[in-house]
Every structure is written in C-alpha cells, then in structure tokens.
Length: 116
Image (cartoon, rainbow, N blue to C red):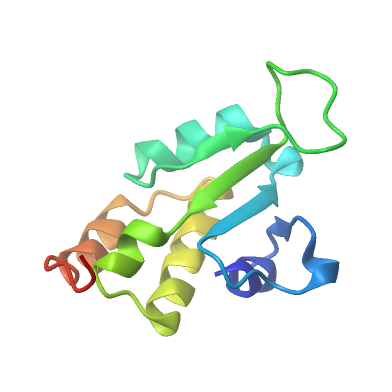
C-alpha cells in the first residue's frame, strides 16, 4: 500500500527505511490541504482514515498527515493487487476526485471474513 501510494504521488513518511510490512502507513498530505481536509474528502468517498500529526507539525489542530490502517481489509481478503487498486482510489480522492462508486464496487468484492 505504501509503495502504491508513493507511486500515485502521495508522500509516504519514513519511506527511506523501506515500506512497512505492517498494516499502518503515515502519509503527508500537506500539499493537498492538510490532514483534516483530506480525511474529510476521503470520508465523503467512504474511505475512513485518521488525520494525524507528523513529526515536523507544530499546530495540533492543523496536522499535515494521515494514518492509514488497512488491517480490516486484509481480514476481508484484500491482497497486494487489491491494495494497489485501493491506493489508486485513495490518491484520486486525495487529489479531489469523486470515487465513491468505484470504492463501493471494490468493497463489494470483499464481504466474507477470511482471517478471524
């Protein structure tokens, strides 16, 4: 997911250490309006994330980052290719596009828990 977001032009934090093997990613969205505005834009497209302070942020009410957790979709069986597709939709929404129908279509493919 981290590499896919980076490929879409979304700045992934700590990428110099390699992309995470966990299900948590921090991204810097300051150039797209900041964490609060981007989190709201994503939520309007039924993608839920947390806005989050990043290490260089100084104003707690205006964070520049998002914390993205994909563990729930992994439980529903999303694999690497699916995460790349989701990253593309997220990047489009971050950049201001409306992707809610495509998000619903993707999510409809993952209805059964595979990992309990």
